[in-house]
Length: 419
Image 1 (cartoon, rainbow, N blue to C red):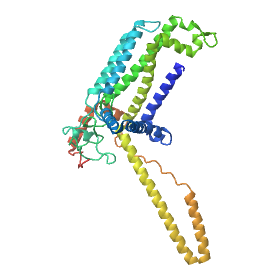
Image 2: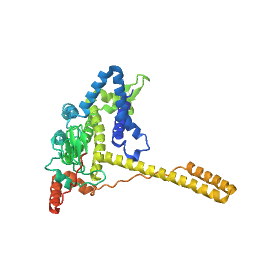
Image 3: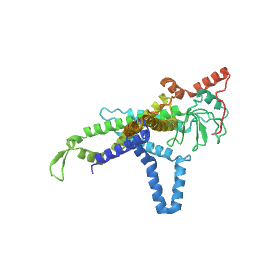
Image 4: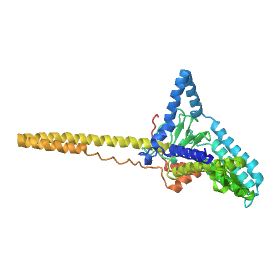
């Protein structure tokens, strides 16, 4: 099979999987196959693996699978952190061994040795900062400041106390079972940094995403230019080969198949790291754009799920009320038709009853009006620039909110209730 076709199919499957995981539960794609694909990836495959393991290994196999899943998904685990570092070091090592020695080549300057190394160090610094900086742990000492910054909206968040931590839960906070602590403005628990993404480390997480996307595209562009220039200097595009099927001469530049074979034979590591960097760059850029959109819209990943569930519950309630109103109207019409038939006589009453029955049948056959989608107000959307500023300078906004609450002389926490 053509190597180019295999790489293209792999890249399309990878991009489709990432897109489904990010937007499979989005309301805009509710009537597409994306929700089913999302369920298949996140739950269906897990059910298949669990059933297969239980059938092959019995109860012991199923128990071992559950323990492995708990260790990987519900406990703090540096395995994915180490995976990222391994991929990072491997890619840089390929550049250091196979690409940097060729510089300078053609119009590609030798400065890329130093700028590439500096970019790699910057990305690694952002990664370590995102991993080990405080995501915004809520304690008894800072709970009031967090509650002052984000008051309860009475819609998604209400005043309550965390059973595990024993501290008041400010609005937009959530207790993470993996980390074992409450996180202010909880977005999600990221396995790549083995930590939660919250109010205080969201800026480092965004820096990590942006720097990773930037260095991926930078590496892909440099790798592509180096390989193309080196091939041109070696006269590779003028080379010809004998096709074993037709026994005719084939110029390298006229056949994609021979180009891929030539690249695999003479530029394997260079092409592999260039292709991987380009594919990873687009994936990380997509997730970065989604994360920036959430920040500018005054939302978090946790709130998107909560608001979706709340909107669905309200929509179901509205549809139930609509059905009940239709039933009440139908019963009222039957009672009115019965009383009219008694007053007008049997003949007229029978005709009216027949007409009423036909009218009700037409109403029943008529499709019910689709209930409009429930739109929930977002009390934490303070404008794109203010939302972004709260993420980039959280300490300043916390001090400002705490000072404003102290000057106002009122506590924003209100009453508490056990969660």
